[in-house]
Length: 206
Image (cartoon, rainbow, N blue to C red):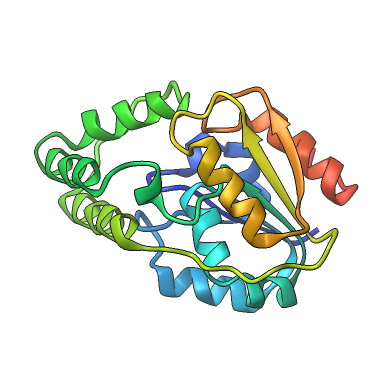
C-alpha cells in the first residue's frame, strides 16, 4: 500500500515512528512547505492520512485529494484553527516560540497528549514554525461535499485542541464521511492509528 501521511504543526517523525518508516511522511512548516505538500497530494497514492494541521491542508484541497487517493483518513481535523484558538492566543504562542522554542513546543505537545520533549531546533526551524502559526491564524478550509465511503473522520473524545463544534463543522461540510470516535487526546496513539489504517484499508502495516 502506498501511504502518505501529512502530520500536524510540529508533528515530527518521532511521534509516529512506525508510520514514518512506511509512508511518505510530511511535516508541515518544519520540514515541508505547503507547496511540497500540494505536490505530494497531486502525486497521489492509495491512502492519505492527515493529522490536525495535515488534515486541514487536505481539506483545503479535498477535490484534488478525492481524485488522487482511494482512502482518506483525517485525524482531529478543523476548518479553521482560529475557531479553536483565538488569533491573539496564536500570536502569543508565536512570540513565545522565538524566546523559548523547546518549551513552547513541549507545552503544546503536552496539551495534545504527547509525552515527548521537544529536541533542540535551529533558528531557521523556529522561524518556519512561526510562519506556520501565522498561517494557522488566518487559514480557512471550505471543502466541497465528498463521495460516500472515501473519507473517514477520527474524533478524539478528549481533544483539548479541536473543539466538538469545529469537528462537527468539518463533518457537516463533507457530508458523507464515516465518523469514528476514539477515546484519546489530540494525538491518536500510534498503535491505535495502525489499527485504524487496517480497519479503513483492510491492509496491515505491521
